[in-house]
Length: 304
Ligand SMILES: NC(=O)c1ccc[n+]([C@@H]2O[C@H](COP(=O)([O-])OP(=O)(O)OC[C@H]3O[C@@H](n4cnc5c(N)ncnc54)[C@H](OP(=O)(O)O)[C@@H]3O)[C@@H](O)[C@H]2O)c1
Image 1 (tube, protein in one colour):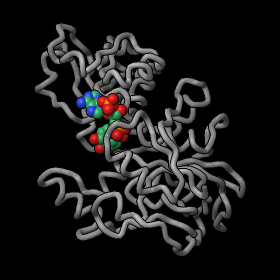
Image 2 (image 1 turned 90 degrees about the horizontal axis):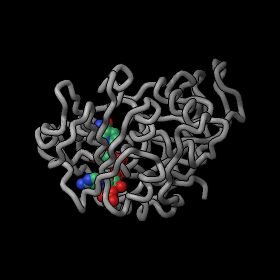
Image 3 (image 1 turned 90 degrees about the vertical axis):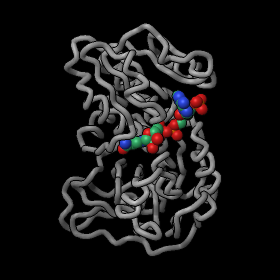
Image 4 (image 1 turned 180 degrees about the vertical axis):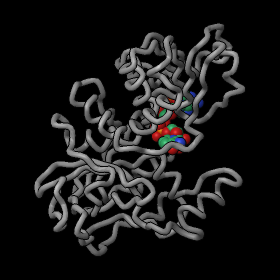
């Protein structure tokens, strides 16, 4: 099968499209023919190892000391079940599925074998493969941090979402809306139209105004772009206010994927796709994600 290999840490140019062995599913696994995946900020970070100080040491320990231990990157997928192992009861051949492999990576390839009880579900009925792949990465992260901020239990839900146009920020707006929050979004003038279409109470354009100087108070501040810190935002928090940032570790659960599926099927969560690339355009796709300016998600069409 074709796969994108990352043989070493470095710039986008290290990536190579190669022919590798097709995985053979074990008895509890399904073999998914991948139709779409994403190139997200996490993939770019793993490839480049662009992190500061001690984090670089941690990342090398987790991902591989001198090169990625798993050379096929990519964590999200949508596709069709091609074969099932002898012990598989949850899925059948032909099912349309979507899911996440997390630190196992491996989705920038034509096939992936995953355990039937791992992070995989039938796709939302109304989603295209591209949409299904695009809602996963930012969706999980947004749900994780907003649940950590206990958004559901907060009697007052005035929330400030900083970095509202990234994959995580766009998802956070939609998850906060699901919780009936009163949302103020921080984005650039370039992102104003997109954020306006998502429907928020207020938009602050960071290239025109320093939002940290506002007199308003918020119950939750979520830095979805990781460029701020609690100290910078402290004056904006009300007495019991909670600050969360993507700079902390987030973990994914199947419940998060179930919620994304449910919301997508209800029309309450939309996939924002900025650009779509083919496998052969992987270097271009990574270069674009490296810029840190994408609006929502970059989809990688497999087989195209
Ligand atoms: N903790 C975790 O497990 C976890 C999981 C996922 C992501 N993350 C981290 O979360 C961050 C965001 O991820 P992502 O995938 O959403 O990134 P992304 O999609 O690449 O974010 C890009 C967006 O950020 C906006 N932006 C850039 N600088 C900004 C600023 N100073 N203020 C407000 N908006 C700004 C850009 O819009 P403009 O160019 O128009 O400003 C662009 O739309 C990354 O650092 C990523 O590593 C962490």
